[in-house]
Image (cartoon, rainbow, N blue to C red; front, side, top):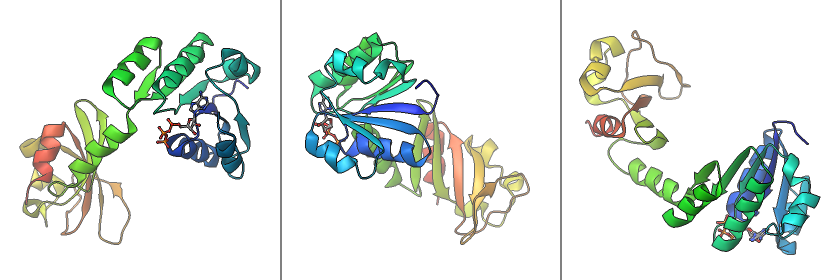
Length: 218
Ligand code: ATP
């Protein structure tokens, strides 16, 4: 172990399993760990390395060579105590990149205190993303940072038939059109000469407020 593309995934529920399988498909070497024999059995058809172990047991983790992994994911949600103990054990093993799933803000704060490098709130984040996608012309909403989002939306009526330069969207709405897709086409980078057509899909970057204002246009 020791290459950058090796990941330890602890907890193979829906979330952990999706991470483990996707990383596997992306060519990463993944070791999945779960305490439940039935879950390990179910994952063994789609994952190369899966073991049954209670990851709160620091000795068991050591025996699995957990300390040699450059990254680890703690995908245990409902058992908060287990999630914290496992995260602590991985921090103790000095794993350089530890992602941990939290189910509440308090859980997340503790994981951060314990030393997780990145805390993810899948249910909350997906709820936020979905709510944004239900409003105005927003099709998808991705928060890159607290003050910076990417949204997928359609071309507003006022800009149809114009180049991006002539439409002056950046000046008017303080957003940047990153790429554009014509109906039936594929996304291409936007340039000042790009002409917007009705039904075009746009990926737009900006602050959440500006991007939402833009997506609320007619
Ligand atoms: P999901 O939403 O991803 O399905 P969940 O939050 O509903 O997950 P959890 O009960 O948190 O489900 O557990 C996720 C997985 O973690 C389960 O398969 C469970 O067996 C495993 N797990 C729980 N505790 C431990 C532990 N101490 N060591 C290893 N695996 C564990």
